[in-house]
Image (tube, rainbow, N blue to C red; front, side, top):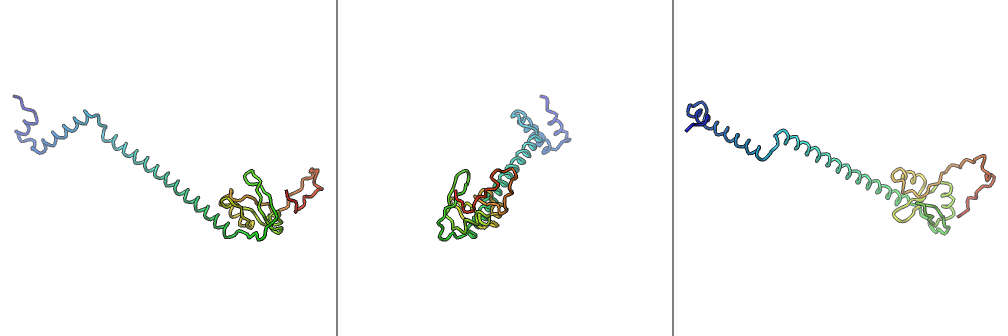
Length: 179
C-alpha cells in the first residue's frame, strides 16, 4: 500500500509529529470552510468594521437627538421661569384687551394703565401653557430669543412712519380705541 507523502516524511524524520498534526488540522479546517462557503478572513474583518462603524454612527445620532431634546427642555424651563418670576400683576383688571394669537382673537382683562403700556410697547403678552401673562417688554425680548412662539403680542415701541400717499394720514387712531 502506498503511503502518503506526510507519512513518508514522518518516518524519515524530516517533519515532527506535532507539526504534521497541526498541518493536517489546518487542511481539514480549510476544507470545511470551503464546504460551508465561508468568506475570506479579510472580508469578515471588513464586514465587522463596517457594522461597528454603522453602530457608532447610529449611537452618535441617537446621542445628538437626546442632547437636542434636553437642550429644548432646558430652554422651555428657562422661558417658564422668566414668565413666572417676571409676570405682571394685573390687579383689579376689568378692561378687556383683544389681540390675535395663532390666527384667533383672544381677550385678556387688563387695567387702563396696562392697556396703554401694551399699546405703547412697554408691556407684552406671552403664553404660558394655556394662559396668557403680561410681562415687561425687555423680558418678552429675552423670551422671544429662546422661544419665539411663546410671545403672543409685543407691540413696537417706536412710532410707525406715516406714508405720504396714505389717504387716512390726517386721521389718527386714538390710543383708547378697543376693537
